[in-house]
Amino acid sequence: MQKTGTQKLNGEQRETLLMWLAADYDWRLIRVWFKERGWPEIARSTVHGYRERHGIELEELRKQRRADALNSGLALKEERVRRLCEHADVLEAIKWTPDEKGRLWNEKAWRELLSQIADEMEPKKIELSGKDGSALQIVLREVIQDNAND
Image (tube, rainbow, N blue to C red; front, side):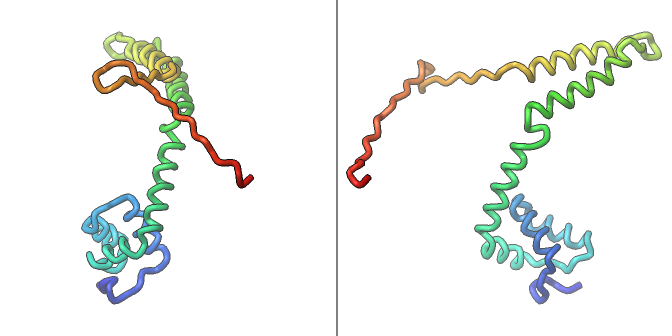
């Protein structure tokens, strides 16, 4: 198997490597993943070189990953509530079905799920305090702008 130090990466390999580097995966893990895909063996120096040469691009990919993670899927309250409600509907249909010993576990799970939905719907409170636990003091300073050039 050739090392990538003597061979250029193709587009798919390059994009995948950049994605893994943006996620800060260790070069040894990347080497394993390259091998699993039947791609050329990747040297530590190649990974290091990509980190250096593509630093700006990697930082942009990191920012995009963070934004995607925080603005999609279960990170969104609405999505969490939607999925909890779907699960509650399933449990509601079977809540009075006893198990082999006659216990109504589904009914208990359904009630707990309703409580979780209510918790998600509650506005979250954020309390701020000063260093010693006292009330936080906010100081607003007026910014004076010179409008002489307008």
